[in-house]
Image (cartoon, rainbow, N blue to C red; front, side, top):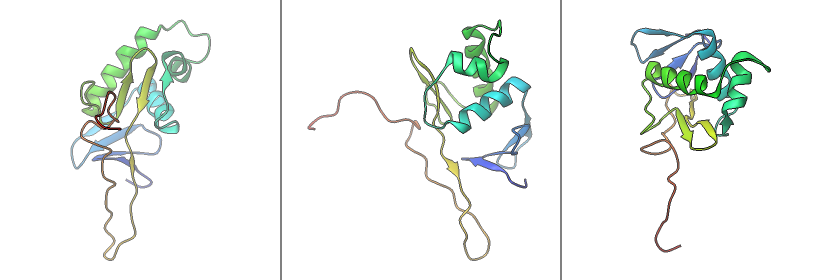
Length: 135
């Protein structure tokens, strides 16, 4: 795809109309899913509240509820092959909202024209919370 945006093995077209998992089938997104993807990728690693996400998909003053965001996030995760328990793309920040945690893959100039991928941020894609021994 020309001008694609990559996260892991997912390649999105610049308008987020569709994506591909590796060489797999094309995924298509609804208007609301595209709006969420654009909002997330414009604000990576920043907590976005349900109200901020509602504004992104429906505009201010919409009659949509914050639970519709939860439904939409779950639908988007299923489509993208992400998991709430072991997120790679969208993490839940309990009591606050959601966070886009995926790192973009940037093509590196290399002899032969191949690109390499950026390593993932960890096994679950999100820094661990909790206690560590020693420090």
